Image (tube, rainbow, N blue to C red; front, top):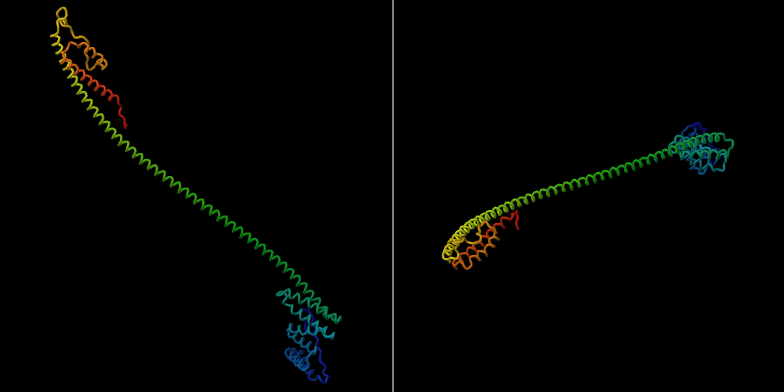
Length: 380
């Protein structure tokens, strides 16, 4: 028997090759030397002895079984398991039962200490170990060690399955938490992106509003500048117009003053002419009176009064202050009165006087028309 591992009794049995067979004496010697080395825990020497015996006579299941026991004790469970599995189908039910029992032990021991590293593989090895123990019991129902190992393997299997389920639940929970966290991160990212887009949109809208405000201010400034320019231009044009009007007014005033001066000069000339005409008229009247006196002196005596005095001239005398109509009305009477009573020379003098008075009337009429004329700034 071998020692216990994790409370599991592991029973390894070696089969001694018979040393009484003459043909197999050398084979038996190698096997016995290997068995002694195995008992002394000289595992490498035991393995070498079993391999030497296989070279002498190969295909012996007992030699293979003993070599597997040496590998198991050396803790080379993988190599030992392979040899035990190869002998588990032996026609020797006792050897096959032992081989299945030890194969189950190899699988069980390989799980110890490795269950946390690879839970799925460990569970699979425990399930196969339980199957090996059950196979050993099927061939040897009295094998109590196999029953004990089944109970221990089943208990460890349940613990590992529970742990695996717990780990799976934790893993699922972790995945769910990770999924929720990822979803939260994604939602947060979307929210941040949405907020960023909103901020960018607000910034663009603010920039657009500032740009529109700036454009509006610029347009208002341009409009104000244009209005100021128009106002300045209007003031300049108004100033030029006022200056032009002032210049025109001065020019019109100068023309008016010149016209007034010319009018005054003309009036003065007409007044002088009138005075001269009046003087001439007085002289002509005096001349006419003198001529009439002479004519009357030479006239027949029937022109005198009864008392011997001379009759005064008939009709009314005119002056410069009398209206023109009165003068015109008096002229035929004067002509009628003088007809047949004056000489040809006197008649010529009288006709010249009439012409002079007519010219004087025309001067007076033009002066009255000019006096009625009201001068303006622009007379056209």
